[in-house]
Image (cartoon, rainbow, N blue to C red; front, side, top):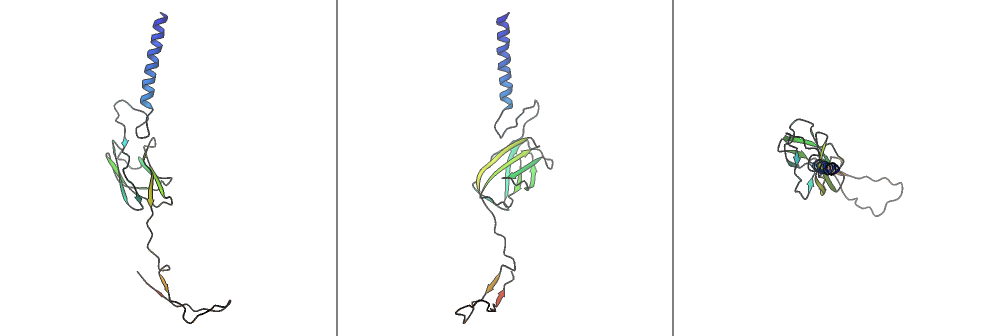
Length: 161
């Protein structure tokens, strides 16, 4: 009788470990597997550089197609535009960032987080100059020295783009 209880306890411990191991998983697999439900999966990106404004395709399987079910963060910036969303992937537009390196995280249905890129170099685009910035100043002629309090006349030519 006691041997039977010991064996039953060992079997219960093995079953518990098997169930527990199926729930703990790496960042790119759902934490709980439900019978009859195929978990969503996001494929890590194979990129070596991000540029502001570029469109990046993030592939996956069994992804939700409804709006706001997928959230993407570039570092801590959650203001990311998803331009296309399907069950096999989605497109995002790389936002303006201040960091030199980027980590991209994807959150599905507010419960499953995937890290799809980590510490990838980032380049911000330089905005076109404004009218105030495109001013050409001509050199001051016949000016050998400037005395404090002296008035200077500076002529310029403004270029319109």
